[in-house]
Length: 372
Image 1 (tube, rainbow, N blue to C red):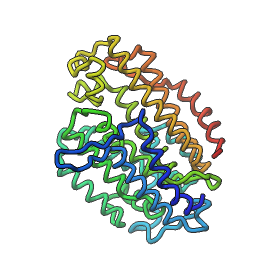
Image 2: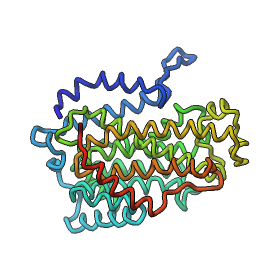
Image 3: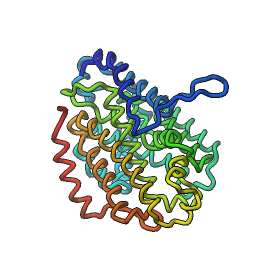
Image 4: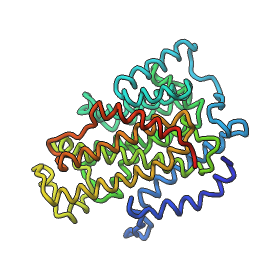
């Protein structure tokens, strides 16, 4: 992939991004002060451009063919290699415990890549646990500020603990920008102060913060196939779409559980257009109005999954399997919601172990098909 080609395609990709009207709201409203209000998608796209530019700067001619050849630009972390290996091994154990299918798929990646993905996964899990874990009731904005300070420290090469050390080493080996990590923490802040979303533009930004960011963190590690002609930005947009699709699927699966906590992660304006209200969500009754509303929400998530598929093909061959596995399994959750007659109030949609086992070879087969 030519770095110059990627640079000259930025305008075209930006225009393509703004054309996805069915997926997100891209309108720019004028505030009372006369300022243009940028849509959430445009805000997120600025982060995409920043990360893509970082990748392009770090790709020297020898590394353009294979991101795996990149060398650390300094000492990885304080301490010796055995401690660092122990840190990565612990990240792998955590990934294997909480994301078994994904962990299995990462084993086909090169050792350096899979260790880096484990480190990113563990940091994301620890961040999510701050607001969804057992200590969530005691988490304050100040605690999140401290967590962000730790993040900045590990990016400077000063990790706080063993798990931080693994990520600190990762961000020195790969062109990973700090902004998606900071944005994920911002998503946790949003959970502390916000329990309603007036439209999909607001919900899109939340989905980016808590899940779309994972794609932007991971692509620099997974790498882009040397034979790919796609622009860096287009691959990042696809990774972003997968993260947002996964989060929307989580939201649609967990409507009942979230309602028990007083939270509704659904566009308020679209609920109103469907003739539904917050009370309908809290009552948890499946009606024709609810079924019709859910059909439209599922349709949107599937469109994002379809968009993501185009980018998976562009990834490095050794990285495609875990991404395909994630995509196929999450998309099946939408099928299970439909199979439950859209009752996501009292029934939790899940993919059976048998279906997961079937999905793995299917994902592997698809991973063999590279860029077209």
